[in-house]
Image 1 (cartoon, rainbow, N blue to C red):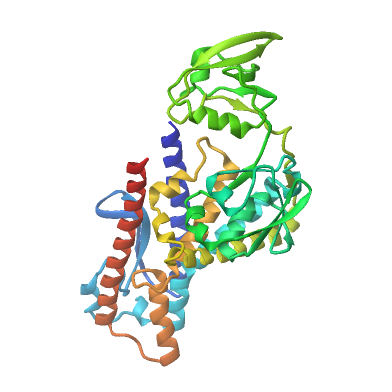
Image 2: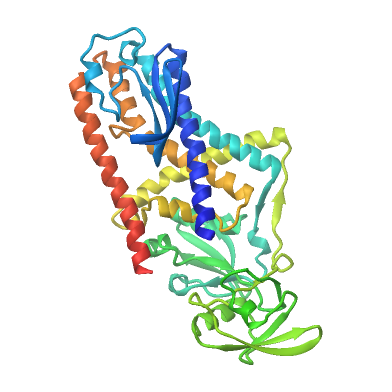
Length: 442
């Protein structure tokens, strides 16, 4: 069920983004009186699930959910309709229009994706506001893994500043270090200010999710607030909502991460939960699942205070614009990590499985729209890359034409389109191959 929910969210988000992107091309093509022959959500290679012709345009839904397209008359695109290009140009064709009009048509898809992202960020802020964990409210300090320990962090450290700038949002510390090549993180360690230099040799590990820091929380009071319907060994063993877990195998843990480590060291090994139920002690034997978890949830809202900023509509517009612009900047910075031999970011490149995995296990509208906005930014940035077959490739040739006054030949554009499609298929295979390899290695 969890996988199905993620797939539905991914397909719904991609459908919205593809339709908006292609509508940008469509509306500008019609604005300049260019005929659009087809407007399809998903690809219809061989056959389509639905199609209907209205006026000059055939609208439809294809069977292959890898994107979508509009087929513009008189344009060399992924359809590779070279026979049409052999005929004399017609007034309604793309190739008959001035270079500046063709340039706007090609830019429109990317522009519409950016506008959509900013609109979604604005609405999210207006409806739900902005909630985050302030660094000053991480009152029990941080918890580290082995890589973060090697970097110099210690459990209980309180993050104060990065390169001398006081940290506001605790969970932006690591992304800031990754994207902006920070030099020093200052922490409060038992009342003493300690500077931890950022050693770039740990960046590849951090990109793999190691070297992360999290907010440390106490083990108790551990009151069970929920029990999943499936994959809950604790529920199957008789644990109930409202039970307070006080010890495991007669061990009283101080910190929650100590309990997590103990569970992972007892995968498949029965443990005894010492529980207080209705004021009475109860012992229950439970065998942790393959992930080293009991399958219980606890309420941590009273342990860590979250800060929420509320926006009215007029405040949310500039704030949403700022979020969109920063998302574009941060995504562009990631390209440096992806292509760097030092960071080996290309090893973390993922395809549809990676994208789908970032959606939550349960349907949450705020999370859905926030992720849809972010993917819209990704789609815009990827499409504007100067690779033939992408919008950016067409834009590159059109800018050349506008600047020089010389139009590349149709034969050159045809060959460039083929090269671009080979590059894109190669990237698609590489990214999704990474996903498959990661699944095999788990």
